[in-house]
Image (tube, rainbow, N blue to C red; front, side, top):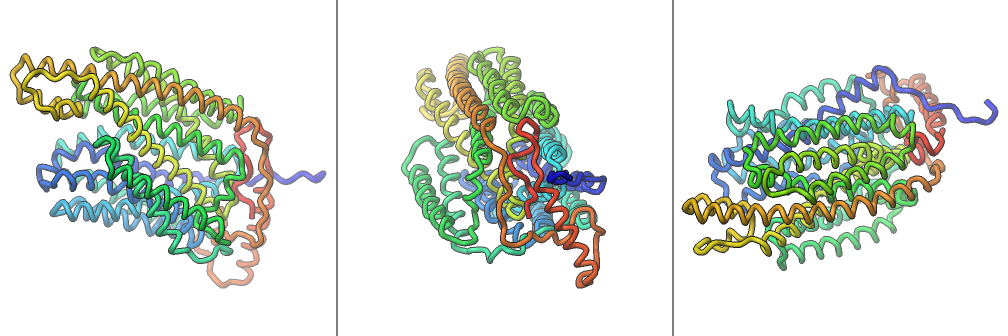
Length: 562
């Protein structure tokens, strides 16, 4: 073979069918997040939660996902990714049923907490299994594009599905969506998905788990609180506490021989560059989606269902662009697709900067479509780079870092852009005489106050409030434009200059408990079959070490070094 390494094995029908199984929880998680917002009025009327309880019902799910992603990604590497996926699916399905029939706000908060912990097992497990099943870099890029498209598809159809369910059924029906999906996953996973774990990993460090939670949860809470209530001692203290704990967590990981979070992954230049690009995109879009949803409903005057339908074109455009990511990168290179996509997103933010308070729906929707088209391919290729830069036995940890970066990015975007837009609103709104001061704090408060006023002062209040809110949206558009241009240029330079990664040295072979393509349900303890499995794993490992040239969709490094 003239010293050349063999090409990676290509995935077959079983792996592609398995990808369909992995897409199910991805679709569900994004759909579950979007339908709850429509159900809140019905839920509040039935359970009568306090203001604080309502916030916890909305936020505790995201808090738990963000807090447990790192732990669950690493745990899957150690106990088995398929096993953790199935346990998480079972818990998520049971918690969804309990949430649907929750008799009180407290019970719903508890069940939402369990759903968040279970949800944290699903995302990194699915991504890590994709890295096992698709060793060929081109096929893996396509598979991750499909995976991300399903996530975006759930966001797109969520408002429509939620609106239809709430028209005919009670609020708990939105939670029951997860039950048949999880049952199907539990039935199909043993038939189509491989099992994989890293046998050389040590025990999970409980101190690191506690430190990761104590670092992530206060920061996410602080950012969300800043966005909702503005600067204050409690959210600022929470952020500082989280950052201080995060410093202790990082120092501990650097000392441990078998850390919960492998910071050595950042030695790969492309890994850090891709993670940064995705986080910046999440910051920009997280804050922007928050503002656009309010604009469409309270400035443009659309109903929640119509406002959701206006956001569908952006989601569909992102899905189409994501599916085009792999073939486009094969032609012009990953760096050009990711960096160029951020420039396209910058053009979308220009339209948001120019959006007017009156008749601005077409401008806002066009800006959303452009921004979505630009970020879709970058999200798919960036995820491919992050997961593929890690050795196979650390793929779960890498996937969890990708998801955690996205969670942090969205939380920061909501906090930073939401807080700046709120500050602009408070500075520019003009309250007619006799209007309570709380109407000057947020647009929803102004709309509520206008409903209790005579026609003339109500009209003047709404006109001023809508203009002030649009000024805040325009500022967010300007900030998003600058961020996309700056980080798009950095992505072009860093990803284009990043060298192909060398295979990482490993002291022990990784253990594919059930190699991809092997018969399902092989008898355990059979020496002949175990020896055959070991030889197959060695051949698979040697094949995975091959690399493609820099201009292809090959990630920096391979995902299967064993």
